[in-house]
Amino acid sequence: MQNSDLLRLFEDLLIKSKNVEYIELLERIHIQLSNISSSIQFEQVHQHIPWSNLFNLLRSNKNDEIERLLCAIMEHFINNLSIEQIMTDFSPLLNTGLENQTGLSQRGKLLCLKAFEKLTHCTTTECFFIIQNLFQYSHINSLLHLFLDSDEQILWLKSKEILEQMIHTVSRIDDKQILQNYLHEHYFHDINRQILLSSNKLNEIVKLRLYEYLIDLCLIDPRIYEHITEEQHLLDQFLYDCTHSDTDILYLMNCLELLTVLTQKSHTLNYLQNKTNVIDHYLHLLLSTNDENNLYDLIKPGLIKFFGCYLRNYLVLLETNISNNQQNQLIERFLPILFDILLQSDPNPYIIIGLDTIGFIGKTLNGKEYILSNIKFSDFIGKLIQMIHSSQSDIRIRCLICLADLFHISKYNSSSSNAWTLTEQIYRLCNRGFSILPIIIQIAKQPFIDLRLAAYRCLFELTRSPWALHAMNAEPGFIEFLLNRSTEKDKEGKEVKFSIIQSICENGEEAKLAIGNVNYLKFRRYINEGIYYVEPEANVAFDGSNE
Image (tube, rainbow, N blue to C red; front, top):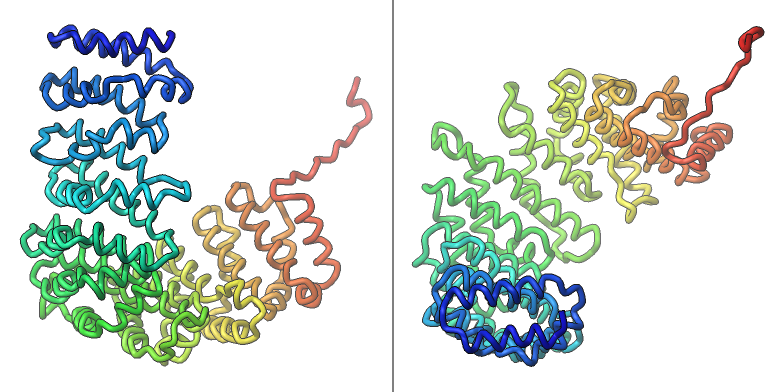
């Protein structure tokens, strides 16, 4: 269909007045637009379309079918026009579409949000200036109202995505003063700040929605975080709720989950380190017993997860020299509590999260040092090996993963003799009651894929330590087991087994010294043949077989 025919249909809309006529024309326009495969044709016709009349029809006509077709037609153009063209053609919709007095329905507001969304995903060098000119404090105010006041999930979620993407885009600006001016004069303009500070007037569900949004913004950029916490003090109410909501367990659990998110970045982690009242309060809750409040048992997994994430990320900062704080009393206070929970004689509901947390902390070099220095660690290792030996399959898998994390050495520390010493100390503790390597190898030979993969992961992590290569070579039949392709039928198993052999060979001279040149060459051949190599079957001819 030629462009002139399409434009004639748009012009015919101006002389129609009945809903039936509108619907017929809009359906024809929608069909023709759906058949266009090139954005070029949209660009050719967009400036000739009577946009103001279409927007007026969208606002004034309350017929559901007309509204649906209008939104579908406009969405075609939003998807295919450039950002500059959308800003020009859709300016009436962008400027007032989200305001309540405009009277747009949910569908109309969603269309407006889709236009905003495309604008915030601008990737050109002029992005910031587009956002600076378009997203002024009044537009952000409308988005915030829709985000916090709307009961329609699709609307408030889309508003949140746009507000966050906007910050992602402006955070690319290197000039700190320009960024600060925009944040102060528009994004966190006083009328917008008042909305963000009104959390005490909101119900718990919307409060959590607001807190999640602010925390997400803090993670984007340290400059955004400083503006939110130090200049605007927008997280003060959240931290107050974290320590004054003990009677509302469900709300407290959600606050705790959001607080855990704050441990992900170095600048937000440092922020938490200064909130000792929050840390002390949660340690007290972790020590609470059933006699004091049996509902506190519901939040203990969340507390263990929070402290585990906090400490692990803190230890990573120490390894990479990002943190200057070399002393952390929290780990010395938390680890004994966690070991006590895990060493309880009866099975408890915290065993899974506890194992994951020990592994999470022990995966770092500093974490290994702290854990080994704790007098209860040897007792924990004894129980861990016992559970690997005789517990149910799901517990055995988590125990093996925990042990693999304890054996883990990062690439950053791959040549560190200190790291090798620490993993060897852990290995020796494992061997006090049982010989751990034969147990892991035996599990790797079992028919259950999840158990095998967990055992393989332990073996893989051990290959990073030269002392472990000697231990593996000394284990009867282990080298032959690795080289025997017929022992593994599953794709995941083949891949992990291949990675074990590959990791051994990456040790170079250390591997040759540990397993010998002959075995090393066999491993190299295994790698050259690939993961899924299948050995050819021998064909044997017998006398008389062709008769």
